[in-house]
Length: 275
Image (cartoon, rainbow, N blue to C red; front, side):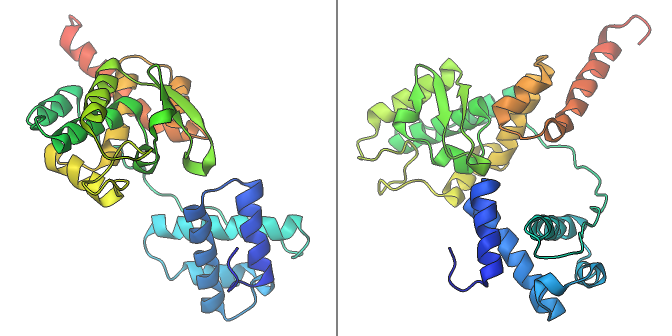
């Protein structure tokens, strides 16, 4: 726990960690938002009114930023209410933000991009295997970089450091498994982690971003979208996709349904006699 926090924020931090099972980065973001609110209002957090909170939120023009701050604030005041730290139950509705459709690349574009990688070197083998791994697993980049050799057994990947610290298990495509095995057979650096830099250290997020960007022109997260999009286009059940992605809510996964509709429309226009 952070020794620079007030007793109230320390208690809230523990609530987020133990009860809500949030990861450390999310918890730090919540605490930072609340300290920012406290500084702006110049009041003790438990003495704030809805008007004070709205005054703080009015300083943010970007609706996504506003909603992120508001999420922290609403969770905090819910915590205060159930702990009887406050009498007023403050809860402010989120601002409506138009959903951006997820960007994705097709299977053909991914294969074309990685086929130019020189696989005569360990680095080339790593880059090739990493991109296939991200596309085959749908992992978040932080999850992927935390994977250890023992986390893959008989084509199944155990994701132990998932968002919210929830574990899940996903199958890996044989082509991705084979690429990883070839890379690891040439990797002589001693480490429990799979994805390493030339010094034998765990590959950083920045390095992984540069690798994917170099060959595909997109970020690693787009490969997660591509994984989900490929499954939806192939006819996968939305709840199965939710489980594979590790989404807590089906609502989060439903953003991909537009791809299914688009694919159905294209098929209709291509093959129906009245097209």
